[in-house]
Image (cartoon, rainbow, N blue to C red; front, top):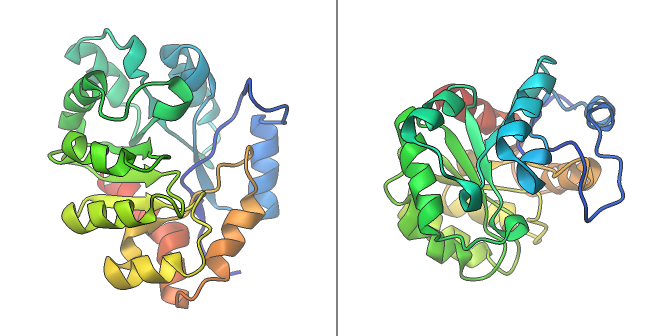
Length: 240
């Protein structure tokens, strides 16, 4: 395999809903096994507990240069000022948001305020848009966001909405870990371009092999697969 692979969606730490090995060591073993060059990752502490402590834990593991730190902020517990966000934002090129797992609406005004505060730094933002209607509701929140917006957890139930949003907003891209619809990558490539698709696995909570094979076995050309598997994410991280 001659691709540079950047996994845009990994995590590590404790997950109360899964009895799995989500350790950094497991993540690194998976990366080595499947020849993943680098992974964007974050501590689950930032999802399920305290996002400030989670961000600190994420920065600590990023001492290993194969791991690219993603920040996170929980809008439900967001009481910080713009100055505090400035301190956080300077450490991360991408922020992740988890409305489903944290139980807040994707068009939350608190989420809108978080985006407003991090917008001057233009990090990429990845948002789980799991259920039908959520990509549509997200549109008004991210319409004026100056950085890249990554739609995560897109599946067959939300693909049409995601495509409509991508056609409307050129800064929106889609991440692949739930996108197992046959022919979906070819459809997206033809309609909006392969440069707007990024590879993610959800590892080690999800299978790296399954997510990787979905891209490798797709109808995309070699050049398009190269973009999806690493080139696009590399450009997002360098450009935000």
